[in-house]
Image (tube, rainbow, N blue to C red; front, side, top):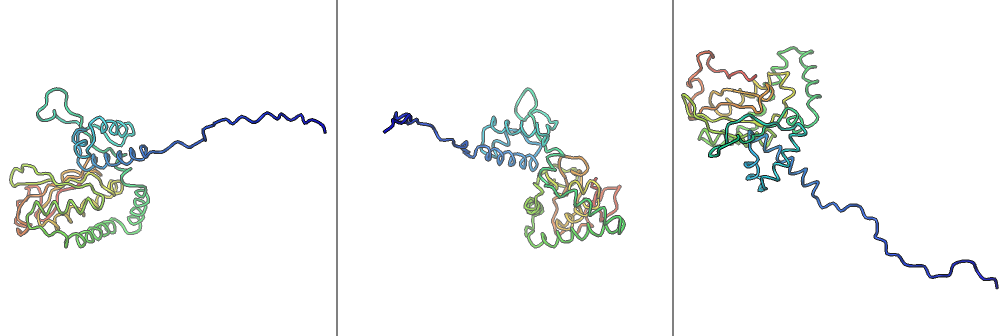
Length: 264
């Protein structure tokens, strides 16, 4: 029987590590989630420092600065000019606010479609149609919010309104300020889901200010808007009894009674 030329040497068993896809321990995903949370906090509380964000998130300042550096590099946040940190000497603390690009990232991808619809409405029905739409939109907001504003204390009522706005994506908060005539708080909205539409259609900002006045039972003064280029929408709210009729409140000499300040 012919001898086979096949090598009969027993095959050597080689231990080869199996090819395994990189193990994802959730770090990348966690970084993205944390970075998004940092962006949302900057929107809601800015101008804010890395230390303040670290306290809120339970992270180290170094970890927060890493996320801030990425967001700043992406152009979604920017450094806000501010004075020195309280109680500290030396270089002023870096305080951050959300940029226009960051506002777009928070808003999602429907702003251009909404703007097109509003332009069509204006072209087909004129400026009055846009104003009516804005009024109807915020009439619906008043109807939805009013039953949930149960506080009688003016500041608590403003804080309830801020909570409702935050639930709808406006990153709202209430900040006390020293008013020249009346005790005042500022209702701040760090994000505006309709920013890019409101940049072109100021009727939305005006209708919103009227809605705030109706919900809070007092004259309000819009100081700044994101649509107008500010890092937040800021509304001055006098802290007076909600039982006081709005027409009895002091009215700035350059304003007519019963109207809101300009929003742009």
